[in-house]
Length: 432
Image (tube, rainbow, N blue to C red; front, top):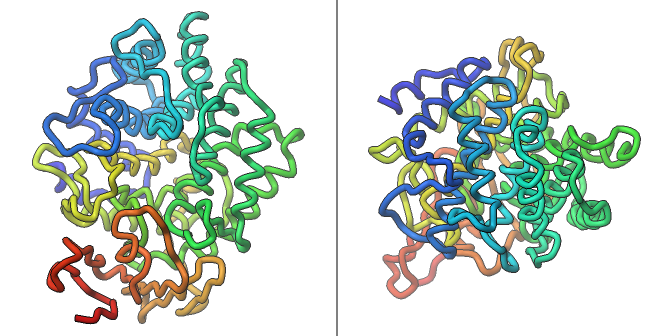
């Protein structure tokens, strides 16, 4: 029933996007208990513990709940968010999110929680007591004292400190500036970044580098941060010109790289453009790219029998999952629901969608290290990587190193490395 309802949506109006969120949230609603943790029951594990997995599930839903509450009254959700922040950041609570270690997964989960507070300063934030606000700030600011990877994680420090600044709590401008400098060091040109290493250019560029930049840009000071804002908007505009080529006319994006279980987070960049009111492409085209992408996903087997997003891509598949993919990890896809914070009168909601007319069928990108080719009428997009490589990653050769990747079908991931038959060789030169 859930799949049937979602499949019927066109995803082209505020009401339909809201309804889509509510449909996917409903199976999880009864699992919320004001603790900041959601237990999805018996499932597989990840490289972090079960408590962290449960906190992750909660926080990833907040990617949608925060934007939704920005424009909608919902007593249950508002009370749930309030109670969860209180319980999760109180050191005396049994539900305390904890004292964090270097490279802690919870630094990732801070992003959604910080965004929720940024958007709802006048409602949710103002309802906390002075002590509760202090607890929240103290828990968040642990990120300034711990080590984190030299990649997209640096945005989490920026987002936390920008949030604290906007909430008139302690923050570090020095860290904001340092981390933006690191982000600039990842810039490759023509709107493209690398995720810490020049040989890694994947979906973390749209759903992390540009998404966070555009999100944060709404909360920077126009006078104080004029040059930074100009850079963010110019780079996102350049990026959009290329990124539209990653989607075929049915809305399917090229399955390439890591973290593909985040699925429709591939379309989160389009949501961020609208949120930042940046018409990098005509709104009619952005709307078509977003709506067809969402429609494409709900033609696939992405839910469990209980209506929970499964780990996999077009169907459940733990073999291709990352070691950091717990049961609730796929809800990173809820980043697309930043659109729910966009005013209903915004031109994006008013225009009729129109698929982009691409000026060329082939595009070579030095920055991406790839050639992208569209078949006739963009029925299929083929992605030919050249020089992409990532270390310390599950199935990296399969995810980054094959001859070609296509929107028509997913790539194969090996089951083992001993027998030839386990190699699952497609678009690969394999010697037996």
